[in-house]
Image 1 (cartoon, chains in turn green, brown):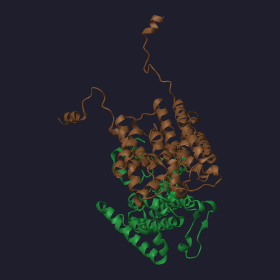
Image 2 (spheres, one colour):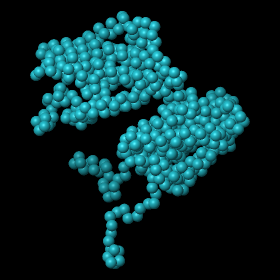
Image 3 (tube, one colour):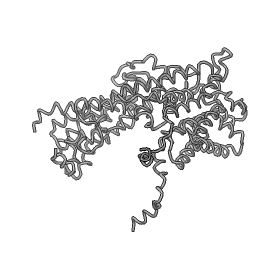
Image 4 (cartoon, helix red, strand yellow):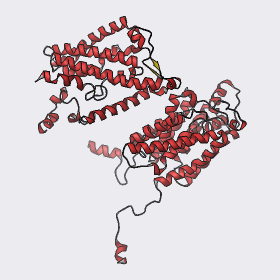
Length: 247
Length: 331
């Protein structure tokens, strides 16, 4: 396998074509919960990305040591260690972010994106490729959160980047959008607005991926799945293999 | 030749109705006219302005979303006009005018066209528009203006909606309530189209006589609320009357809950649907934080309609009962 040739692809696929939130539909819970403000979204995206890159590297390095039967508990232990480290760092250096994210910071442990990448990619590929994959997926996750949070914060609260100063350590308190500031559409910071924004951004990502000749993110079995190449279930599923042979 | 023709039997259907979507929608618009007139009488020219904006923006949004999605045009079936009218009837007169197009956009683009247009919407579009506005701008959507203040050259006198007053009256005692006759005529604060019960009932009767809607849903819906309130008010008939005439119950029961797309087809299903609407409305009114629950109850039951229809599919004539089938299958 020509690993060097595909590294660029591993990096860029996470941004739109295999965007974890918008195309693989993983990690929806933290996405809906933390995309009410752009500051929180950036914080969440970065924390999850760090955990993702680190856990991808370690799991990929240990992939030949971990027995297949207990791989999930082993992955969870690795991920949980990194989440604990990140949480302690955030608590020590950016307590504002810790308050804002609340329970969603420790919940990165069960974030589907991280476990999903460990299972689908890091468990089968080399250390370098896994690190690049983690970086790409992390950028994709952060970008999706950023886009959703921008829409939700501007329409729902009439501000942009409010409270960013607390994250980077100065007095900057974001921008206030003149008209929307006085008449915020509250529904956008509530759950229904979150689902609505998610659906719209997902449709947009589908459109973008389609224009690049990729299939829509539809649940139509293995052949349409953007993860088909790397999926663990696929290799054991006979029907999928048959289709591949036919193709 | 004529003899031969008499014997030729064409494929069914043999007898077609003259009703079209457009003619049904036209009937509904005619039925809404009394309410429209009442709203202008009680709330002044601004009510008419809001109604015109709502109808206009709904039709424009319908046209453009069909155009952008490259689908056939459906503005001719007049359904967007009704959505606009019903949306406007669900707004208070003092609402800032720029909020009206937002409601229309949610109703037409999100609730209707995203799901495939007329006949495909999973909830009543006008109610979806109202609920999004209510959740987004709670203050503007619950500032009530007393009726007829527009003719006295006042900027508008705010007043509590009678339904909110009843609830405080029940808990505290005295409160200035409009009399029951005033409630029936619509001489009270509230949304544009919900105040005049007589106008709504006249429109509803017209629809029932024209066989556009069946009386099942409105009657059972209102009946369930009446029964629940009779128990909740400990047999006080006056309280029941206020509950029935207050809020948007009449408008909801006759014009929103009977929407073809979002109500069950089967008779049994209609009963379940209407009882559910009545129960949720009453529970929200008595136990909830909101003074009014009609829009939420109808939306919630709209979502349940596919399930209700699934369990009330009539048994085809001549087929064995379900239990028998299961027994046979076991054997």
